[in-house]
Image 1: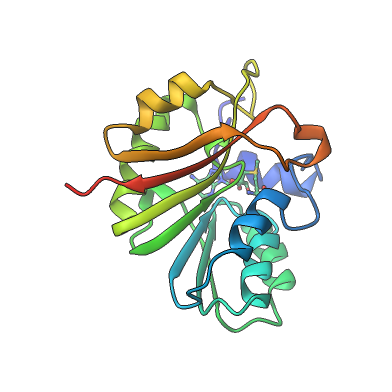
Image 2: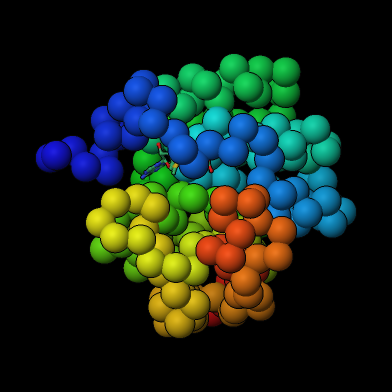
Length: 196
Ligand SMILES: C[S@@+](CC[C@H](N)C(=O)[O-])C[C@H]1O[C@@H](n2cnc3c(N)ncnc32)[C@H](O)[C@@H]1O
């Protein structure tokens, strides 16, 4: 398939309802992380956000400055429907790698594993650029390998090597509160942007 992992590829996955990643609800580890945040004014980005459950949860919890971006027009359409009751969420259709902005917190869930592994250094660089000086990148990474197709996995060692130049690895541990099908396969992480 020539358009593998392109905008068209992802849009077709939504059109054909091949969206096995969609939890239909806020992800429990991210919910637990969000629940202990106290400053509701921080700027938050969720890239490759899909149906937008985490963004909806953030809005329900009173977060004032939430941005979501997805490359697939149909995902954005679904997201806009799911988020229509909330005014304080900016929904963008576009490529994360072309996005410009400044965020205190970026939340990751099944976006890193959806991009071509060759783009991982670019992902790290872009995340660092999008974060404020004391910004954090927080979320979930698969801690196991999957062959050939998304989700593309990895290992703790690989992630330490990949992120350490731009981030301080505060947490990168097996996730205790994953959804059942992902239990044992996910690492929860909290990376602080390195102050340069
Ligand atoms: C595996 S899905 C995960 C969706 C969502 N995070 C979830 O957990 O339900 C990957 C998402 O990333 C989006 N995506 C892929 N490449 C992208 C890019 N370069 N920029 C923005 N979104 C992208 C896809 O359209 C898709 O919605």
